[in-house]
Length: 288
Image 1 (spheres, rainbow, N blue to C red):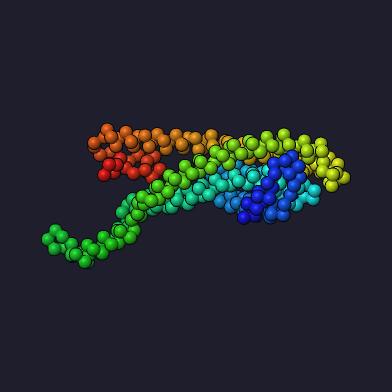
Image 2 (spheres, rainbow, N blue to C red; image 1 turned 90 degrees about the horizontal axis):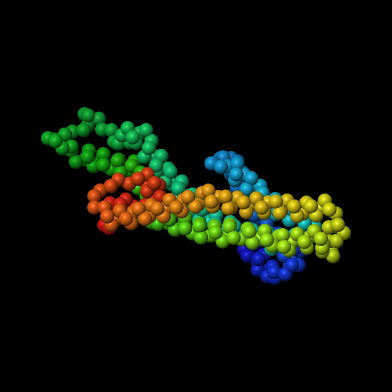
């Protein structure tokens, strides 16, 4: 809410507004953002997931401009640009949904691949003396108890709605990543170089002229934020190129493969590991 009010209040794109104009709600939004970055940084350092070093650098670089804006006197520079940079977190929403569903799938897979599941120890162990057999059949009560125990312990397969939800979240992630994490950081860097740096460095605000005449303070206000902006833009582009483009190609190729096999294949075929990871339905199920 504070971010929305901040962006609504900074309605002008003039050089003065982009460089000097500040709003109370902007500082409030930045304070919440600082808390988010610090909390996420603690989580990354605590569990040290894959590529945790890159995410650590990302969170530190992202927090620096907002720390300077909120806590260094006289450094209220480029509030609108900083507020727009926070919009990169829009793509975090579908990304978190994908991680939640992936964690649930990993838990199910771990149960399936556990030694007890592989060795069959999860089945109901009925002593021989109690496993009364009449002819070739077990007594119905014993058989029903075994089936009930097996159903309780065998992990249930992924539900259909979760497969569709995961697919929608992925494409929503790509649809938000391109404008908010690829296009917008480059556009904001252009604004920084074309407007904010000339105005802030060479033409200080009249009210802050005595303060901004200090070269060291101007350097502290501007340079760390500019460096952080470059790092964030580079990070977003590298993740898209190295992670999301291969994933897009993999999903599209598997989709086309399913479509071709559903038309040309009339026999049974087992699911590949990639298909299971993507949550795609087996080929044998297509057309039913």
